[in-house]
Length: 211
Image (cartoon, rainbow, N blue to C red; front, side):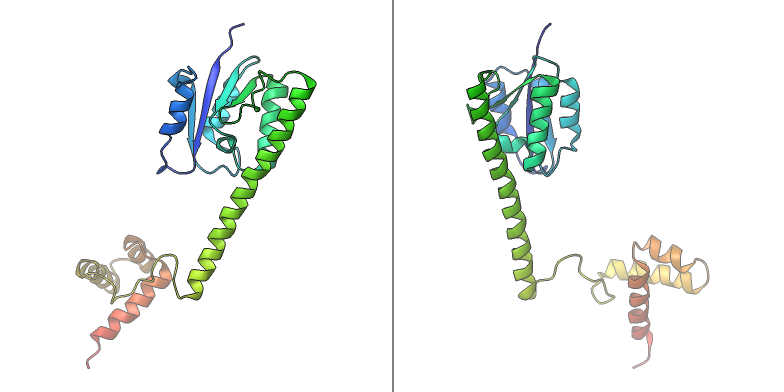
């Protein structure tokens, strides 16, 4: 039975460049059509290209990845996927930047033990790094909030509107006041929440009052 070689690439976002990983896989002689790329977090394995790749893997095939953290960053998830591929599907895995993690070469019991030990350590490191990143992000947000930095969308007000936005608001406001449309239609067409709409209505009506 003919066996095939596949490559898998993961980058955390659409802004990250996968060129380095592609080059390392192509240098192994893997056909570009057999390289699967996901652009999302490594927190779990619910990724479309990963699932498609696993569905195509057959006994005797080989999966190449540039580094272990490209598989994922969750220790339990990495170990489960690794065992599923190597023991249930009976395909091999090669981690290019870690020669010990090449299941083609370590078929004897000592080699398997060493590879499993390295896998356990590296998968723990990958998960620990993910935890550290999340902790740093949380601490950074908390620190920024203490300094008065505000997150999320700025609250909209009549004063913060541009001239064009005010003109559009007034047009819709007048139609609503004349009974030509409901409040729901009005704030939906203005792409506002109900709360924001009535807040701006109040602010606008304040400007109409004689001084």
